[in-house]
Structures are given as C-alpha cells and as structure tokens.
Length: 473
Image (cartoon, rainbow, N blue to C red):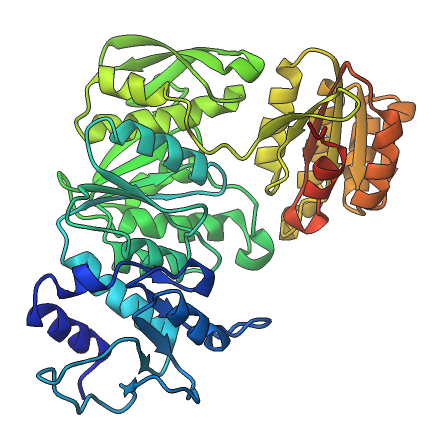
C-alpha cells in the first residue's frame, strides 16, 4: 500500500520546485489560509475543521487533508486504501486528500519536509520560560543566521508540525518550543524535528495534576536531552541551578553546557540588579572573560533567560558583539505588559498563565517598583499534589512584598491565609470570589500611586480584570 508519505515524495520528485512553489503554508484554521496553502481539517470537541474546507478553498488553499467523507464538488484523492491514480495525469486544484487520521498525516508530511532541509534545530523545553527564551534566542541568532522560530506556544503534536512546514531552504537555524503533558510526548516531537541542541529551563509543578510528580515531569522533559545526537554535534544546555535539570547530564551523549548563577557552571552571572521596567543589569562570566550587561528584560529572574540565549549564541559560534546586540534588541514578545488603569494606577498584566515559579518571579518584579504595591492573585490550576504547598509559598512571598494582597478563587484563600501567618495585617488581605468581583472592587479602590500585579491561571479569567480597568485613550 502506498502511504501519504510516498505520495508527497512522488509529488516533490515530479518537479523539485513543485511543492515549494505550490504549497505555501499549512494551516488548521481556515481563516489563516492563503493562496497555495494546505488546510488540515481536524475534528475537535467544539469545532470540526471539516465544516470549513470550503472556506479554506475560497481563501486560496490548494489542498485539504480530510478524514471524513464530504459532500462537495471538489475532487477527492482517497488514500485510506492506497493510491490508484497516476501522477502522469494532471491534478487540478483545489482537491481533498482523504486519510485515516489528519493529525497523523500532518505529522508524516511535516517530518518528510523537515528531512529535506539542512537546518540546525534548537529545541527548548521546561516548566517556565520557554517562550521568552525562544524569543530572545531568536533575536540573538538572527544577528548571523536566517532563523525560524515557532509562533506563540505552538509546541505540541499539531503546532510543532505546522512550524516545520514554515521551514525553507533559506533557513539555517530553527528554534522550537516543545511542550509536555505525558511521557513520550517530547520524544515524539524530537523524532519529527530532530534537534541538535536541547535547552531545558527548569522543572516546576505546572501540569503536575496530569503529569504527576516533579520527578515525572523531569523524566518527560529529559526526553529532549536523550534525543540529541552525540557530541560534538549534539549539545545539551542545562540549568545548573535546578538539581533536576542538572541531573539530566547523566542521560545524554551530547556535549553538556551548564548555565546558572553558580560559578561551577560554564556560563554564569552575578551582580544582578533589577531596574524595574528599565530591565536588569548583571555580569556574565565565561572562560575567564567578564562581560557587563544591561538588557530590557523584566525582573531579576530574567537573568536565566539571558543566560540561555547567550549559551545558544555561544554554542552556535556567535561573537560577543553579535550576542550583546541580540540581547539588547528589545523587540521580544513579552507576556507581561504594563498599562495604565483609568485611575492612573500602573497595571502589570501577567495574566497569560500562572505557576508557583512564575508567581514568585512576578512578585520579585513588583518588589522593584515604586508606589503602593498591590498583588491581585488568582488560583493556580493543575498543580496536583503541589496545590497546597505551591499556594502557601506564593502567599508567604507576597507578604514580604506587597502593601495589599487581593486573592481570587478558592485556592487563592490558601495564599491569603499563608500571607496572614507570615505577618501581613489582615486588613491588608482581601479575598474575592472571581474576576468580576475583583473588577467591581478595584474600580473604587485603586489610586494613581498604585502599582498592581494581576496574575493567575487562564481558567480564572484574570485578563478580564485588566481589560475592564485599562485606560482607553
């Protein structure tokens, strides 16, 4: 039986430029279809992509991968039981390719496409900091190489293959996020992307509800390091300050490059100074050299992001001039955004998601700010066995930073109790039911001199708070 892989190989071999010239992109959202794109119809719980094949074709898509029979006027190439047509016949577009499973078909053709290209892939995984590391490292590598990076957090079994489709012969480097929910997932992504460099940020408790313990999460993340080629081609860039990440050095044949705040690391930093919204200042140390650095990253914790991006630059042969220029470019997509409220208060919008690690980092940034410090913190979801301890840890830290703590949700009450135990006066602790209650309260409570951190898991709808309070000019 001829598989989808063979069909695409045949199409490519028919004319080397055929696919490159005709298939411009691969999309799962018909609204993103452009002339020449491949549309993958994926049936979901709430939306079925098969309902939008016609819309994708109207927008210019040439092909659609489908797994359901459609009543349409477009030709259908049925690959479920083999391929009987001949490539000598003209194939008119648009047409549908009927397969057993569209996600698997996407993965097959994305893997094939990646294998046609001589491109060095850097994979990034970890509990916190993947996206900011990807953005900053991309800024560094672009100083010399034509670099592809995954969009947003397209780091799963659908998003990563879609990113692979973005590769071209002009790219020489690609930086890809790799997410983890269950064991084996990152290994599967590595089989598709074939990274030569692997970066692990840290091992936290986010997604522990599904994955289990931190040790299980560490095992899943280490699949990236285990998948790397042997030294000297393969390089594992590991966080020396995280014991679970440091231990991964035992499980790879790749060259190990440690970064961190410990002088035992290959690349390390000290004299770290937070400058609030003006960034951070620190010293880098590498092979006897000392580099003084100031970069537009928010919070002292961001020094690890800078270390990871620097390590990638060093591994890929960039000069210090190129690395420093990339670090200072300041054009990264940061998830934390600072905006003014209608009252004049300064809102630190960090509502993308939350874990104990990212909560503590955000509180460290709040500590650097001038004014009355208010933290509006919502439940951290999916922490599993770390739920109680994680919320208590954040509450304890908040007590030493904030003037006022406002918690939202049932788990937020754990933070409130921990802050009270630590000594934050009870009149400075406010517990609210949900984001709507917070909006109503904050509209009357905030003043011009306030600096307000808003953070919580996406399921808590914390973004609504910022949207409701933000000043509209």
